[in-house]
Length: 530
Image (cartoon, rainbow, N blue to C red; front, side, top):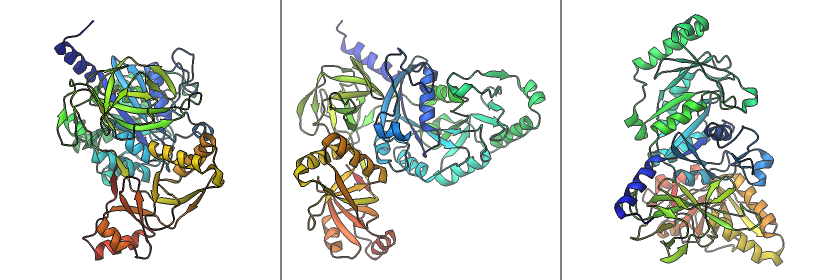
């Protein structure tokens, strides 16, 4: 049935209001992948945790699809998982959990409307958490916090609240609060109702955890000193104003905090419900000029991730597109912003890890996988109707550099083609020395990126590569004037990206700081726009 323009606008607006699109960020081993799996369990997308079975039981559906991920038990690349929950459509953008592979996470956060920050109650804020939060802060992304592993020995939760405030400047406002110390965990008090939810273990956490609601009077009798201490802590939190505030949460200034144990499923429902109730739905996005394209306008979106060979049988390219406005319909012809050429969406899919299913329509907040998208690049805009260009996705300053050469010169074409593809996917940054060695210099945020590159070059392009690390440890974007001044400076090397962007690579951060202090007029920027 053909819809009138007004009816279509109404449908798009209503559907956008049903979407919740968020990413999970954490330091390695904080429990991000476990929490991701438990969200799927509670939504019904998995029959039981650990088995990682699709709802229909026909395929495996896990967020970790690369062989390296399955072998090592870590998340290396990001993916998208869509599932229904309480009448909403949830788009969970799963991010890498390894400390050395964070640039992919940075890009994924540009497609999210909110984030869940998972903290290990024994470790608190760690280096990776701070890096990821800076990206969230730059985007004013609302963040919910989950204190995980409360069933194990850990630190005082009040101290962790102070640490969150001091180290990342986020005002944590507990919604649930633990009764009992970490490692002697009795359950949580829901500050919204005053009820006590008693902690119950489940066998290996494969089933939804039973929740025993206990009246406060009964809890006071049965929990003794642990209850008294928790009530005193809640009184203190109330006295300092650490209460849920929706406006400051949506502004990225405060963070509703929940406690529990993802491994045993305890506290997972509280957090998932809060995402539905508190996290924002899809909102109009600003374009390069600062104007916002209405949600009900014709389709528009941007590519935030590229991935090749997710399906080894077809060795194809998939572009992950965040829908920003309008209704997407499979088969529609869009305009590719950078070239102005038409782009067919005949092979459009929804994504559930590596599992794909054809998708007929999508709305703002959704993620669409466009197959056979070799010509699309990260950051490219796609649209129907009026042109739109969304802001470029940042490329973060690399910290590791290595010169790359194929071991077999006869396979140089395969080596070059592989580098081009992996650069398009954002696996590494490929640089060259305008005045020196013609061999490409690979740049990365973390060492895992180099491991992924060498494995994929070998298995997907049949070429072995030697990587020789350079002595440089950080880079800053620069301009031609500054590059000319730095070109003959010891400890500095000028490198260029394919698009002409110049980088000054330094052997020592102290030397860079010294040069910057002596020459404040020089251009040395830490974030490089893509």
